[in-house]
Length: 291
Image: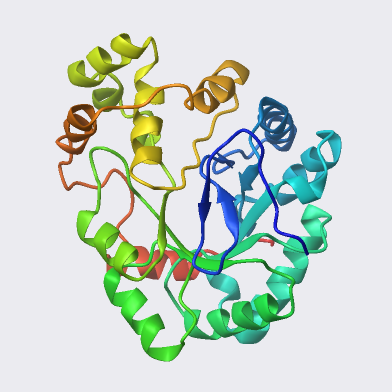
């Protein structure tokens, strides 16, 4: 297939030569399928060209229908999904992938990710490598992988992930993992770029001052910071005005002082789950959904 182009927005080139839009639309926690479908249609019509879903979100059917209803060709879009922990292992991952395609009503994925580094993720990675070689996936990557888990993967395969999708926002920047990703030509993709609407973050006086200077919102300043750091970012919202606002971040640029002001907000404290927590791992291994 010819290399895709995404008019009017920046792209990041992955380590296999595939381009991904730098700004995408996430659908985590969109459990109401009608609402999810409307949000994705709105996002695509606003200009987003990358949609990020997952089997465990249980909204792949809504995403697939939204793509059909959007008026934009499938081949102009970058669609990502993820294999859930219960389907880790070579055979199970291959079956799970086919189910994902069926729910999305698609013949291929632009990117497929391992959602958590638990269970037989090495078997899953082997399946992803084969699906990639067969052309059914254009890029393969991981989510929530620590340096240790990436090292384990690296020791077992010559094929490194194109992306590591992780918790990252101004108050939790994972600088060590950022450096590791960069050194290994793995793009960092924050899955909660706005810290899930963290009130302290969105009301920060420094960020408010920067936002006022550019006549932007604090959320737009944060998204702009992510983009200028070289991250691929996937904000989410079901509110039409917010969907538009989050996309309207290409007409201004933060100076180095302003970038440093955002960098200085790092507390090193997670707002979400810790992949290294054995209790969290045990919990995730027990989550079985009808997917």
